[in-house]
Amino acid sequence: MRLKVRKDNLEVEVVALLNSGYEAPTPQLIVPIEIARRLHLWPPEDAQEVILDTAGGPLRAWFYSRAAKVRVVAQDVESKEVLTDIIVSPLADECLISDMLAEELEIAVESFGRGLWRFRWEPKEKLRQSERKVVT
Image 1 (cartoon, rainbow, N blue to C red):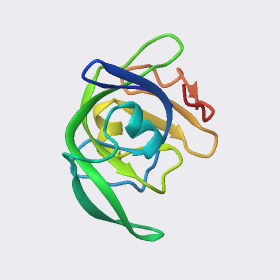
Image 2: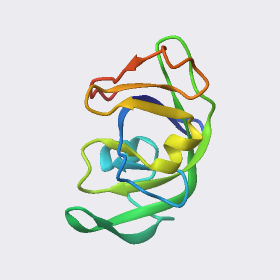
Image 3: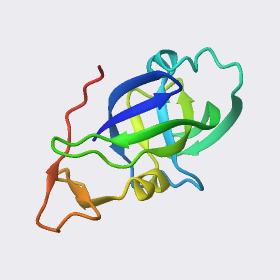
């Protein structure tokens, strides 16, 4: 889905994946180094270095607590803004939305395989198509 990520006076628009297996205790967004640079979060200065357990094994990353505000941008509406942690991954090639961030953004996935979703406050018939991967 298309997101606007805002840190201070900087804003970038990205297409992010909602990963049902990305469980987190807080709203979190994993970003590649390229996006972190655009948000002035790279190279890491105030970040906490962390080791994440992933399906591919341990991953060294950089954690910024409550570092940005994120909102979903659909064709006809935007979600509320959510304060989120940013995790910078040197291996990521796209942004990943955690389960808690999806919850706070009020996203309801109707079909992972077909890429169909809606906002929880929308009627069940209002299905939205997933975005293609594009970074602006």
